[in-house]
Image 1 (cartoon, each protein chain N blue to C red):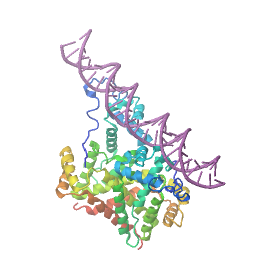
Image 2 (image 1 turned 120 degrees about the vertical axis):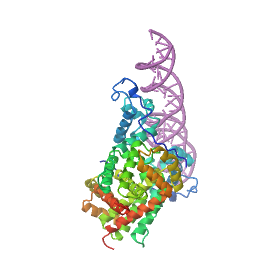
Image 3 (image 1 turned 135 degrees about the horizontal axis):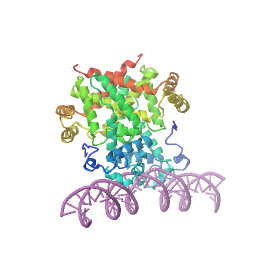
Image 4 (image 1 turned 90 degrees about the vertical axis):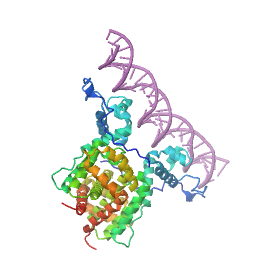
Length: 241
Length: 241
DNA sequence: CCACTCACTCGTACACTGTACGTCGTACGC
DNA sequence: GCGTACGACGTACAGTGTACGAGTGAGTGG
C-alpha cells in the first residue's frame, strides 16, 4: 500500500504575503487569492455540480486566465482538498455543556444541512489523503465530546465511526433520490414507479408504494428517525457518567 | 424538479439478435455484445478506478474501435447503469427460512464484499435515475424479508433505509481510509498521523491514537460491530412475530 | 536613477476525454 | 442477384487538466 498522507494548511505558503506588502490593492475585491479561488470554486460546484467545475470555467468566473489559478493551487486535487476543508469549517462543532446525545445530534443535523448545500462534497469528505485543519478540529471536538460523556477510547471510536457512517450514508442516499418532499415522493411513486412494477413480480414493492402513498410518507423525516435510533443504540456503550 | 426515471432492461433491444441468425460467430469469444462490453468495463473499472474507464480504453481492451461501443450502449451513462445492475446482481439476496436478522446480516455482509470488489460503484448504486432489474429484484427481496418478519410497511421502510445508509456509508468510509488491516492502521497512525498532531492542540486525538495503537485496534471489525448494533436497534420496531 | 529580482498573469500547446457524423464491408431476406 | 440494414470504425469537434515559458510591473539594492 503506497499512500501519501500529509496534513495541509490550505491557506498558507502559496498565497500572496499580503502583510509584507503595503496592500497594493484592495486585496479582496480585484486581486486573486487562494481564499477567493476556493470560495468561487465552491459556488461554482454548488451551482453546476462537480462535473461543471473546470479550471477554465472557474477562471472565467474570476475574470482571470486559466493558468493564473495555478499560482494559488498546485493542481485540481489541492483545490478540492481546500474546498472540502471549507465545507468542514461550515459544520457546527458539538456544543459543550449539554448531554452528549443532544450535542452529537446538533452537530450531525448541522452536517447534514451543510452536505445538502454542497452535495458534491459527500464523496470526498473522508477520501482526501490529507485532512485539512478544519477537518482535524472537527474530529478532535467530536472525540472530546464522546470521551467526556464517558465513552472509552474504543467505544468512542465505534460511536464516532457509526455516526459518520450514518451521516455520509444518509447524505449519499438523500442526494441520489429524485424526490425531496412528501409531495414529490407521491408524484414520483404514482406516476413513475408504480406503473413500472408488475404486481405479480413485485408484490411487496407495490404494497409498500401503495401504503406509503396513502399515509403521506415524508422521506425528510427519515433522517431524525434513524439518527435518534443510532444515538439510543450507542447510549449503552457508555461505561461511566 | 425535472427528473426522468425509467426502468431499463439492460440486455435487451440493443444487443445483436443472436438467435435470429445462424450464429455467424462463436458469439461470446470474438464478437462484441452488450454483456461483453459491460463485463469488460467492470473489469477495467475494478483495475483502474472509474477515472481510468474511458470509452477508448475500453474499446482497446475489447480490440475494437471506440465508436463501435456505441452500438451496444447509447452513451457512457447507460454503460454505467448497466454496470451498476451487474453489481447488484452479484449481491446475495436475503435467504428465506431464517430469522430476519440473520437474513439481513447475510445480504449486508455480501453487499459489503461486493462493494469492496467494485469500489467505483458505491457512489452510483442509488444515484442512477433508472433502477435496473437486478436492483428492483434486490429491493423486492429485502422488503419481503422485512414484511414477513412482522415489520409494518412504514417500519420496513425505515429499516430498509437505515440498513442501506449503513451499508453505503460504511463502504464509502472504508474505501476512503488509507489503511485496511490492523497492521496498516498501526503503521499509518505511528508514522503519519501522530507526528502531525500537536498534543496540546489535539489531546483527544492523540490519546485515541495511542490507546488504539496499544490495543491493536482492527478497523475491519468495525463493520460487524455497527451492523449488529443497527440490527438490534431495529428489532423493537417489529410489531408481530 | 538604474538595474535586478521576483511575484504574478496568462497564451500556447499537448495529450486526453465523450461522442456526432458519415462511410464502409458484409450478411441477410426477397 | 440485389437492396437493405447492421455492425464497425475513421475523422472531427469541443471540452478537459496542466507543462512550459514569455510577459509585466512593482519593489529593492547599488
